[in-house]
Image: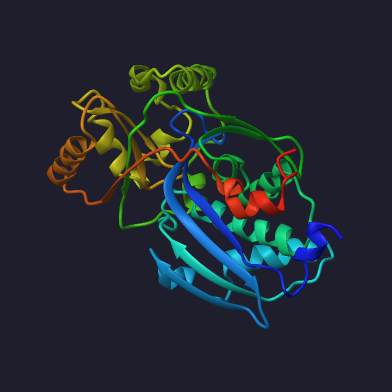
Length: 324
């Protein structure tokens, strides 16, 4: 009897998942690259007599609403599409990821639902299928790939069901600060402000800066970031929806601050800090600048999460072939 068949029984052991927040686009790499961040969605699930849910942590009132819950909806839909039985689950959620703020919360939730379907439905899905399914639901592969694989990922959809993903382990130290405003901006709203066409000059500049950004990460060259983070595809059009972005970009080149980029569709902003300067000092400088500009935001010092959702010990133990 295979492990997948055994895990499909009602006496299956609980599954634990740890999925990181993600910051996509990274300036010029629109819909193509993302970083995993050390803020996490923790999910523990077991088969139960009926669906139940408990949540704590950030946005627990949203995470704890069982009706139209993104994790459970995704879990059901994947199993139904695969003609597998939908076992009721008892979920325990602890969340650190800001919801609706451009930090990959929906990608993490969808991947959790997909992983639960793969586990309790006995599906033999590969990483590319798991990321592909999440990307199809997200309409782009950047957040999903970084959340599942960890570190820095570059991704594209190979077809309707699978994603091509390259995982990059950045060299050196990359201290980060995530600035999260109180207000949220929907991805749909952020998409609507983008133009339908771009000039050749803008397209070429973004390609050049994306390549420079990848070189910065792979060669431990944070000094390249002030130029590499410049974007002409989405940030100029989304800045009015995310006032933190222009304010924090003003600090580029300041002591301890290498550059800033919109996190996903915003309104949060990811700030790259100089590893030679104490991060707490840079955070104080940023806080003072925002106060001067009469802007407020939660400021989280964080780092690149080198491991993604697929790397949990529980997952690896029961899915040794999932990375093929």
